[in-house]
Every structure is written in C-alpha cells, then in structure tokens.
Amino acid sequence: MDFQTLNPLSTQILIRTATDQDLIHLEWDGEYRHFRKLYQEIYESSKKGDAILWVVELNGSGIIGQVFIQLDSVRKELADGSTRAYLYGFRIQPDYRNQGIGSHLLRYVETDLYSRGFVKVTLNVGRENIDAHRLYDRNGYEIVGVESGNWSYLDENGLRKQVNEPAWRMEKRLDGKQVNGG
View (cartoon, rainbow, N blue to C red):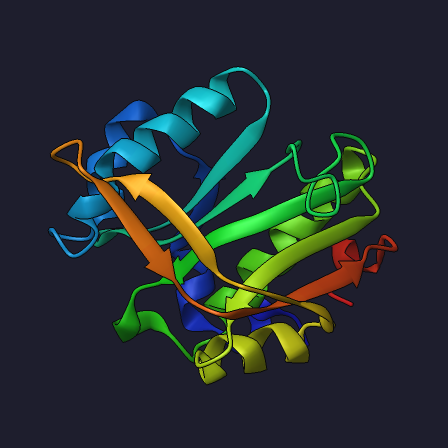
C-alpha cells in the first residue's frame, strides 16, 4: 500500500519548493531562529540552481516539514552537481512524526532527484539521533563513512556559531523505484 492509502493526512499535505515567504516559517515559531541567515543563504543558492528547498505544508496547519538538497558542493563526495546530491536540514514537526510523512517526503525528493539524472543521495545523520538513523535505514540508506560533524554558521545576529555533532554519512543509490513507492 502507498502513503495515500495508509495515511488520512495524505490528502491534506502538499510537498512543494519553498518560497521566500516560507523562510520565516522554517524557524518553527522561533525554535530554529538561529538558522535565519543560513535559511536565507540556502534559499539564495536555490535561486541559482545549486540547491532545492522542499517544504511539507499541511492544509490549515502551515509548514510541518522541510528538507534541503545541495546539488553541487566543494565536497564532491557529498554533491557533485550531476550524479550525487546531498540531503540535509530534514525535519518533520514532532506532532507529525511516525505517521509516514518523513518516508513520503524522502521518496518524493528521491523521485525528483532521479528525474534530474542523480543516481545517489548522501546525507549525514547525528550519531546520537537514533530516530532519524532508523528512518533513513528503513528507507534504504546505508552507512558509508563517518563525519566529524564540525561546521559553523552565522546566527540571526551575525555571530559565528560552531557546531560539533559527530555523524554517520549515509548513502542511497537511486534506481527509479522511488516513483512507485519502492
């Protein structure tokens, strides 16, 4: 059975690319306000064709999920612009988790990437984020390496913040089966 058969929310959700008006909603009522400049930077990258920002919108409730795709990166092992894309910033609001929405969003994004000629998707998942690791594992991602998890960003006040989140690098080969929910 597919997502629409199993999930009554399926007729109420829309997966679409983000607009500039969506950026404030990606902050989830302030929880992710510190990423405001990062979201703007990613959005600008999407306008150049280097990234894609997807949102999951629930009729009457607004944006309940998001995922960012980097199509090209200086780190070619993550995204090379033609065959490998990098998935990050994947979130489903807590009240909507464990309802199949995350898996549905992954398949949607994988189908889109496959249609663009990409054959692999990579991602990093925090080693302590057991639930996310389980989601990716269930959806065919395999651990292919380790990441130090050291990165930085400018917060909403323009201050550089350092992040240390050791991660597993995971990867999935796309084969077109995503289109049919495989």
